[in-house]
Length: 262
Ligand code: LHQ
Image 1: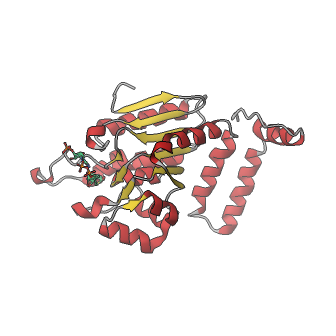
Image 2: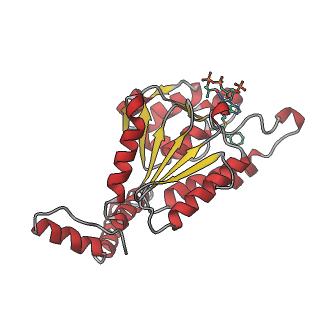
Image 3: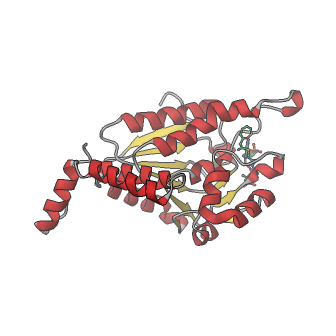
């Protein structure tokens, strides 16, 4: 990576992407946004990459947009332009990449930082981490898909309350509410994330990617339409070498050796 504000580390079958501006709790700047997009594209295009971990360096995951980047007192900014240029493409990409994306939330996730984390597929959080819909404190509305994602995850009552109050939600509460997958002991966070990613990287990658697409499509589909989509997608999954290997391995009573290939 040309810019050290985002670090990329290749592991065995997966990639770890780390937001790296710890002194500012990894708050997003345009350069960091661009580097993150580049890192995600590279992982997506790498045939050896079968899962992604997204995490943050230091004591925070990400404090949202860097508020020092632009002073509104110096002129009315077009925040819609910022969203259109940086945040919407980012959360769209997180959902479009047909690989499991694990977010390891190592510390506070605020504003767009919270909603980027929650746009990932499997969210683990350190027990000391907090999710803060900080927008109301600065006169803004939640963005980066939060009003869509968070409302679906925890329902309108809780979504409106945390968005209108900006109250921090602890990792353990987030787990109880179904906003994230699991809250884990701080010292265990990265072990858990690596073990999850390593498992995914040995999985039937095409099937996992298609599963992601199906679950995401369900929100906009009728039950009947979703049944049709499952039928068509299963047809596709059934043509992969990993399906043949999975069934053969089952019948031979041995672990499957998936390749992840189409
Ligand atoms: C920061 C930030 C930050 C710069 C901590 N920026 N430096 C989209 C489109 C366009 C425009 C606007 O926004 C958006 C989407 C958004 O994300 S809006 C929401 C933006 N984020 C926030 O409002 C959160 C602001 N941060 C906080 O409320 C606190 O920092 C939290 C609660 C996250 C953490 O509090 P503490 O643990 O007490 O840490 P701290 O406040 O002392 O922060 C540590 C350093 O990080 C500090 O720098 P310094 O040089 O003084 O040590 C902060 O200024 C800096 N920092 N967030 N968003």
